[in-house]
Amino acid sequence: MRKIERAMNRAVRSRSNFSSSNTMVRCGWDNEADVYLHGNHIATIKSNSIIIKDGGWQSNTTKSRLNALLDEFSYGMRVFQKNYEWFVGYKNVKEDFVSGMELAID
Image (cartoon, rainbow, N blue to C red):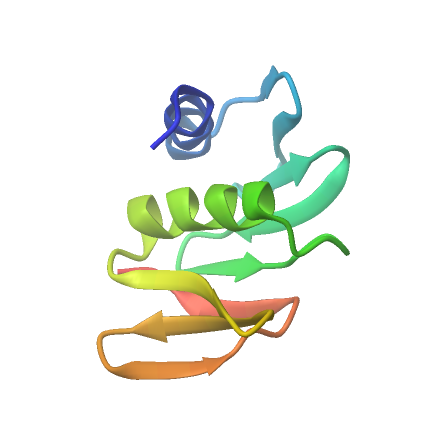
């Protein structure tokens, strides 16, 4: 995991605002944290779930940030790519990635 992703996860976990390079975390009054990459909203972390989005860009960096969040908050869940298509997988189960999908937090 990249240094910026560790810092991003710390900010989300502590519900504190964070900004570094191309990644930003903004925490709201409702105890949710929104994560942005290059100004595009890519995730919302709630108390019981995480909403993941591609922000309009299915890039390697977007996938890396989402996987860092999933490692921290929904361990075992991964975003991966096969034949230019994105999927979300857990153990032997995979489903199509849909921007805005909501996943349970462990």
